[in-house]
Amino acid sequence: MIRPAPPGHCPAYERYAALPKAHLHVHLEAAMRPGTMREWCAEDGVEVPPLVDFPHFTGFLDAYGVLISLLHTPERLGRLLDEVVADAAAQGVVALEFASIPDKSAAFDSAEEALEFILPAASAAGRRHGVWTGAIVSIDRGAGPGHALEAAGLAARFAERGVVAVGLVADERGNPVADAAEAFAIAREAGLGVVPHAGELAGPEEVRSALDLGVDRIQHGVRAAEDPRVVAELAASGVCLDVCPSSNVILGVYPTLAEHPLPTLLDAGVRCSIGADDPLLFGVDVVDEYVLAHEQMGIPDAGLAGCARASIDSSFAPADLKRGALAGVDDWEREAGQLPG
Image (tube, rainbow, N blue to C red; front, side, top):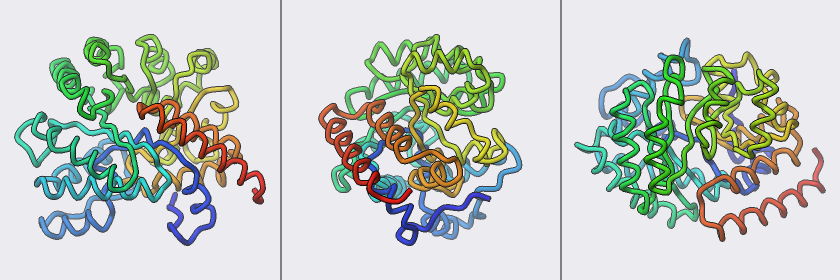
């Protein structure tokens, strides 16, 4: 079972926490602190959901639903945002792109009201903790075409106020990425990025479909490794995969981290960022994922610095922030080259 390295007690954790990085694949509600979750469950008389060990994808979605239900007041949502951004800062994150489905908010009567609260609260937390933040409005691919168009239109209305992209989440099987093409066009018209989940529970054909739609990044995308032609297309396109290895193992996409294709994808020239996906539910934060990538997947420091560069360069953060963060990665790599492996 994958367990996180305790922050502050593991030299490897501290080492990779010092590496500047963007966190591009994290779902807001599931970035809740364990202590905060237990506190709110006790206050609401709700049973603590299972963590890390999920018998199937539906069990994971059920646990996620509990987290959404806990966020039934603006005060709780504001606290969540502050804690998530503070934790990101402690993990060396300079740019945080968090995903959520605003119309599922339990604290507000509408998705518009939810974003009216979330965006300035996230920006204020970013200023307090020194982290740039951008919001990804997620389309629930199982909710039908009407929802997809509504979500894209909502994102477009907030394009100049902190929303940076639209995503596409939930079970791919039977819900292909191509079905969201019209919603993606609305987002693009508004100047937003497109960052769907693809190639996680479905195969490499979904990654190719995402590429055909002209997406900016692909969340997961690891099943591309099953088709060398798709891997070559990815490498040639420069599209970044936002990879979450522990998530893939815990949800049964791969049996172990040792069998995860991230090293293969990197060796083939595919740009990859590293993310934690749902830190609370999977028991790892983004730094833990870097540690595991090095210790259990054999990716050297140079490769991990490359992932950090890809994350920063592929983010929607301002250009001046990117320049400073990339210089910080160079500094980290020079120092890392003087340390034992």
